[in-house]
Image (cartoon, rainbow, N blue to C red; front, side, top):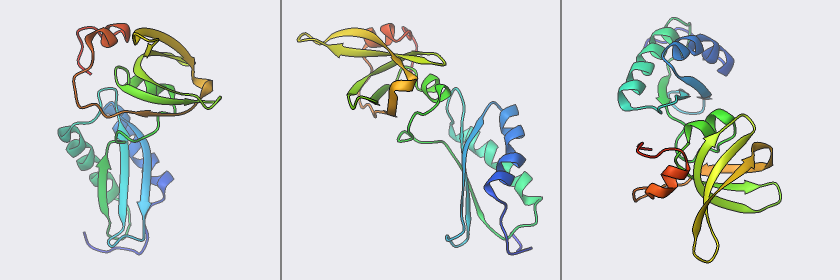
Length: 175
């Protein structure tokens, strides 16, 4: 890229420029990080969709973002389009809905921590399939989003328990 000026767009400018095209493709912009200390500077666009992002989608969104950003009068930069990653905290009803069927660890306002498989998600509550009791029986608990301080997806290395998936409302579906 040829240097045209000594500035980069702001986070707001990048979001405003890209969000319409990303939305038409079925994806939301979760964040834009502009790192001017990197050499060359870096513009990272974090996007997500109901079915996540695969490599083909990331490539297509990168091409779209590059075409739109190239029209700006900016200094050279490296563009990165990426997914939020598994370590992103779940903070909105949309985040919880997109993580449905995944194991999560949730910290509540009273300091308690609970782990389980995320089930149905509404605007105010989420269902969590948990193991409880001496026999580790499975039960579904409704948790108010307003009582959740922190929630993160847990990495799983083995297939989910079919009964957990059934209770999470995902019987016969892949997560």
